[in-house]
Length: 479
Image (cartoon, rainbow, N blue to C red; front, side, top):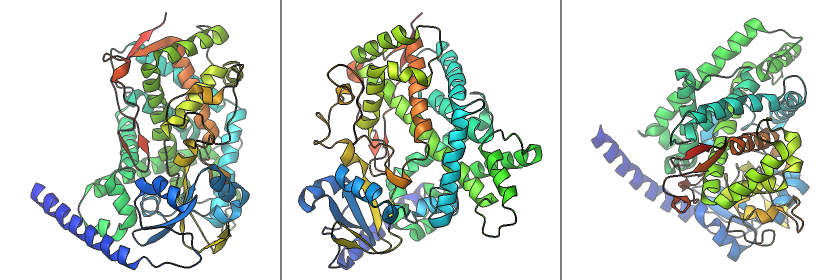
């Protein structure tokens, strides 16, 4: 088995070098396109110093235009929103979703699913037993769980908690942290993000046909995603059998209601394939990202104990020790809010955003960008832009505070991207980050046995996502 993999890898390496060489020979230049060389991701920021804020690179054979800096991003994604709402057929995403669902779709399908998802999230945010209560409920389980733990790696507990919030939203139920089936689903989700960020994932996106033929971990991953899809399908089946059209319990119920309303419309987007893939989208996009952010936040607080202490003082003076934090508290906790924003800025979780795509020829800043060009909004460049941040490369909550210690917004805070394709779950994610971290700090002081200097805040690896390093941490109850 090892022999096969090794020779497979060598053959693959040879093929890739040959292909890259071929492609670099062939990068055709069109006179109206912005300038630029064929290039890998890491160098994009460097290149923009030479080629300016809008540049063209070739990834394999794929023509790609990169947007660098707040001004270029805003001009494209907000001011010329309709030209830039397309999503490219990213091979990995197409493979995982079978081409259905919110993230990968365009046109009418995308508009319908996005509007519906935003509306449903908003309805669950405000009415009935809303998202806020679900998150408060879940944070109690998390606190109780941590209370009985010595030194631990928070990855697993945090994934459970955040994933349960999505479960409440889509399935109307939470799972026990000891439920084996639930645990294996979480592992799959975590694997997906890691695979997306690995060289294998990048190669799959550039040479999907080749990667389908070659051996490698992509096949194991796709098999696991199939299990996740089956789990979702079972849940949908259960929902169909117990549906009460007058009181929808969760996202799936709302979708099924809409499906029944539109059953006579042949072009309806509210069908089974879109439901399965959109639930999968919400699940994949809403679990690992948020739990990694909270995990990174704990590392930051251990690295800077004085910041942790200052947050705790503010939290106790506003909320006390007993009461459960709620979103209303946020405006009375400016320092805490500033730290949470800075954590997201500094973490730079999805540095290149998800690729957009031109569905037709468009003009932008005097250039013509032809149809079928990938657009990469380099969020990284906005979150680190010197024009907008005093100390872009260091962790500094003052970025979000004015002279009087009040919270101040910054237009370049775009971790969720911006415009019509910005993260659909932004308000949910921000609610989770706030409620989970505030209740954790209300109950615990976090440290690690190696001391604060042993924490390295640079990512463990970075490409599609900046995945934070993992540490064994100690949570000392505060009372």
